[in-house]
Length: 213
Image 1 (cartoon, rainbow, N blue to C red):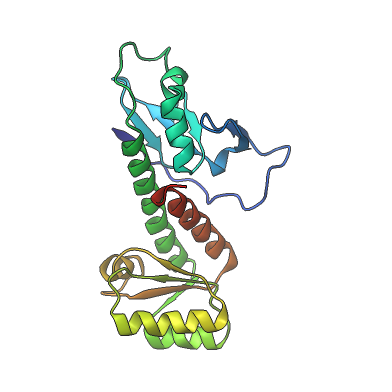
Image 2 (image 1 turned 180 degrees about the vertical axis):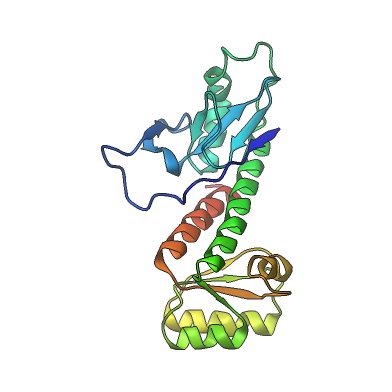
């Protein structure tokens, strides 16, 4: 498999508008904004891949960020038909492999977004700094490392619960630290609405693929 990974702007926040490009999901057949769909592409040898930033050249097929749509497309051979003119006698697509590659693409975009959000001064890290941000009602989203110490995780969860702030589990203390330009970071607080929306959208897509519906 291969993956196109060219940067693009963050996901659109608004719903469909006349000037917003739309595409049809080959699984459920619903029409949605192009930016809210997975774009599947094929290489010259017939291998399937995910266009991570929706900027890859050539023909693509679109799917919702939903396991059901992936499974339906595979069952109905919709993916094979979408590219039938490109490759002859190519292997059938592996639905689970495509799901996992899509999850990997989302996680790569999340990591990129956390770096960009820090550069835009939209994040805070460090226990005392985050606690102060909660006290000032500045936190809109909290990203908690998978390997955060139990006591640390409980402390941050209590702060989030008390203020109604959503919590997402993602990455490790090392990877979050890298994103924030520090050694080890157990949590990252997002304080700017546009960045909180962008990250929340990606986390939502990730959940829908991690858990079968």
